[in-house]
Each structure stands twice: as C-alpha cells, then as structure tokens.
Length: 194
Image 1 (cartoon, helix red, strand yellow):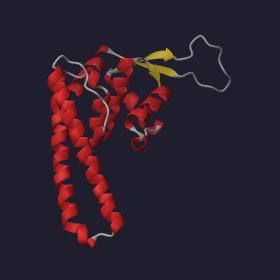
Image 2: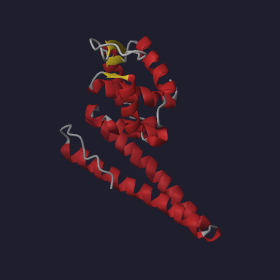
Image 3: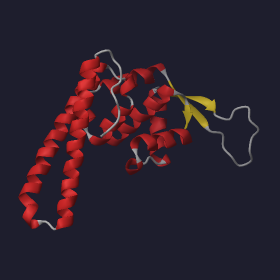
Image 4: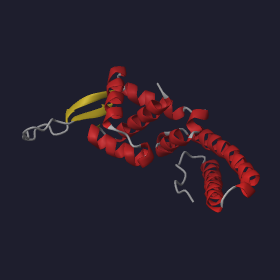
C-alpha cells in the first residue's frame, strides 16, 4: 500500500468506524479531514473502497436510499460499513507510531482519530512529530541565517514565516505531550493549534 493510499485507507476506516456512509458523504468528510491541498477525487476514493471491500475491511450495506421512490436517471448510493476485520485493521494502523506517523499528512489523519488511539501510541506519535519538527526548525534557522544577505525582503519574510509556523507547532506539540503525560487516563488532549 502506497503512502498516499495508506493515508486514505486510514481516514476511510476511521470515518466508517464512526458510522456507515456512502461515497459522496465519505468524500466530503475526507476532504474536511485532509484539507483542500489533499482533496480526494472519486477517481482515488472508489478504487480504495474497492480494495478495502476485497480485503474484507468494509462491506456494502445496501443503497442509502433503499425504500425511497426511484428517481429517474439517478443511481442508488451504496452505503459502506466497517467490518470486524476493518476494525482490527484500523486499530493496527492507529497503533503504528513510527516515523511514517510523524509525517505531515499522516500525522494529521492520526490526530483526527486520536480518540480511538492507545495513550502510549499517541504519546509516541506526538513525541516523534515534535522531534521531526525540531529537526526542520534547526534546518530552517540555519537556512535563514546563511542566506539572509542574499535574499530579497519578500523571500526572507516568507522564510521567517515558515520558521515561525514550525516554532508554533513545536510549542503546540509540547503542550499536547504535557497534557497526555499529565492526564495518563486516556483522555484525548486538547486539539487547538496555537
């Protein structure tokens, strides 16, 4: 499973864990979770759904509008639901706390489903993400310091803006980690980025 497809599968399984949905509703919810820069097309979603059906992770639950009068020219929407195997796969993916879980897109999807994630896995993911961003912050600081004289004002401001964003996220992650360590009871930590 490719990196992008793995993120999509994690997000679909997480959403179907909340409730059964048809493709249109899934796509709408996925785009709100993944954001506009990672918008999911039907050309990506339906092959992923077909793959998850073949693996037994999801099942078709019949048309969403079963029992409703048929509208001419309109296809019935198939509702997808999570299977027991899908729940196991979701939990396995949520428990993955290695470097892939710390990357930008994967981290955001993991964070969206932290309420279903084991406390220890959440903490490992948060600490790994912070470590990755601390490395990025050091690189950005070095880049700004080395190129300050050679950059025009706008490029310099753009680099400083990027650095400030990384510094803000490092602070936010430190707060989430402190909350996780303080609560220790499995409560989800605050989700507000500062």
